[in-house]
Image (cartoon, rainbow, N blue to C red; front, side, top):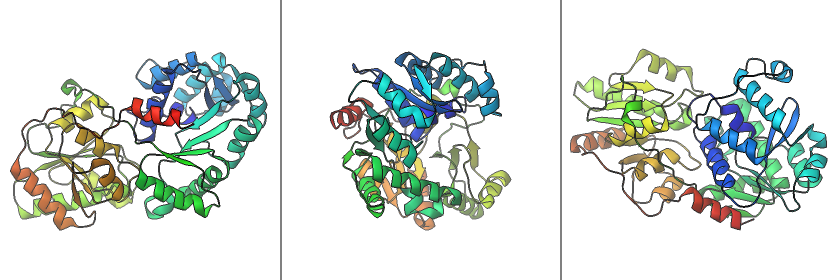
Length: 394
């Protein structure tokens, strides 16, 4: 639970964080006992279902604790929310121990045959997985969302490539089962695992799609929902290729024509400073908004002319899948993973072909679009279906 705890109080969950939340909620609904692990400055915490229920509530908006203990003040300086959350969990923990004694602690408290399940890319080190597999005698199951930092290092922060390489090497050495979210992703993942010397058994389980009910009351008033706008959804970083969309809208402006608007929804990640400079300076017809709730995002999407997703690389592409599930037209990059999950429910373009994007966006804008209701389509997994595949694959 380490990664999810670190995200509490930082706005709407995205990407892997949403997967962790779905797993937490789904596993708490199972008949078998569920425990949680979290690393803290006081060592590894073993959490009960009651504590996990509290975490679920916090992740869904319940009031966060505020009381910080001495360990939190020292070990989580500058992180008051995480410090208070960990203090609360430490008081209620079944047990806690430093990492080198965690194996003994877990053998004492967990049932025989317990499975360690990590779906968040956190704490995937050789040392930790060795302790869990050999010291605690747990079966290690890891979801490898993608290997983009190794496949496309130009789209990752330089300091993260070696870190991710060590994670993949640890998975290769210690995982009993690797979960993949699609066949295309599995192929790329297993190429990198093979380079580390061992490809563990794998299981493909497409991610579930959970749609928030559109709530227009939660949409900030500064967002113009009148017809004629497109949405770009996701963290602002080089891989998502926002620069291409800014180029397109600058071309619209230079042509002097009345064209569509672009609403960018997402927090700033890391990027070439020039991209942020362009956003700060402003591009005609483009607005940027962050921190929206899932219900507000669904509302903005539902009235749009379409989702624009010119990404260079994806492990799964949940924003595109969720938009398609809402019945919103999707214009996206021509990537194997997106073709696998979207099928015929998208228009595919080369992510570097600015002319094709400009022409397609303009055609879609001129075509217009009536308000679209949610369409019940086949081919979309629920989280219950996803978990059924995973839990029967152990």
